[in-house]
Image (tube, rainbow, N blue to C red; front, side, top):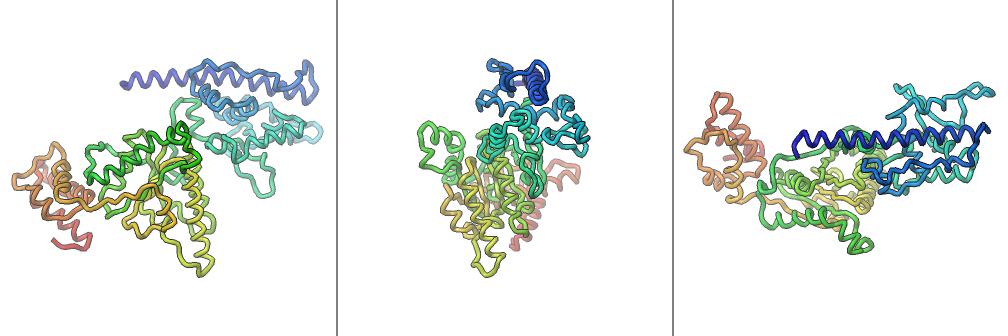
Length: 458
């Protein structure tokens, strides 16, 4: 599909969303008007707001309509979802809720709502949803509250939630917050990528290389295929083959071996081959000295990744998944609690988790027992190093005749990552001379520098 065709499809999808959301906004306006008439006993009172039938979008191909069909959402769920969307797409629709109570000379408490820091409109809360759907009906109000329980698909699938409220304040006073991904999906029809920040301390990692560029032993490649098979067929195994009760929902693998042997590249290539995004977790933003903060930071990651086709990649995982210590003080006890929390979240997580470590023995045995695979990335052998050297340089580079990569591969025990550092060094040397020639002397100097970094000599 060319760029113009792709853009045209995006525009059409966006227009389909706009058409269906416009119909939904009209419906919400009618529901809101009906609630006011019922509540304030106005003219032409309908029996119930639930008598206001939502638009029929069953035949629509918009992203929003597809979501409504997929979850078979109820009247109440549909209205709550729209309330969360309205500040982003038509904020003026809720201005009527700013009405002042003549008796108290302030806003109506039952309407809920918040003032934003920069947003000038009415920000709906759980109270707003409860008022529109339940009015004075306490039983119905309690039912509305269940829409924000942790086991509701809004929360479980990270679609919509109530913002956190201060201690002692009613839960329903939290603002209705729709996830950024679903906001983009329902409007522009583009599945947005989460931004790297304190709420999501993970970066999307990608590679321009292909599976055929991966130079590893056949045994290692075969184990990587096991992960690929899970990504492609795991859901069928659990659902169609009815193995959900017998198998864990996700797949966890440990990649271990010396630095530069292809652990990160392999994770990227598995994602690329399976059409999955790979997110590398920034452990410096996860691990905290404050009690409970590490668990909270991890929960954000797993909550965001749940029910998405993502691979979570924990590099240098020893910092988080290391051996538990003997309990000598409260710090050790809380550190061990973090490990227990991790075990629980990984076992419950339905996606793929890859941990990378230089040494297998650094990882806590409790984790190792629960891994579906443990994959060793060895130092490449001479034949493998030769393949890396042979394909490493730019096609625009001219290699000096004295460069014998077979001899270099035999003589120097280097990882693929180290070889690429040498390639970078010698290529920049050539460019600094205004040439395209890669010289043997530069390659050997680059090798010496890398060996010195590792405390080795030529």
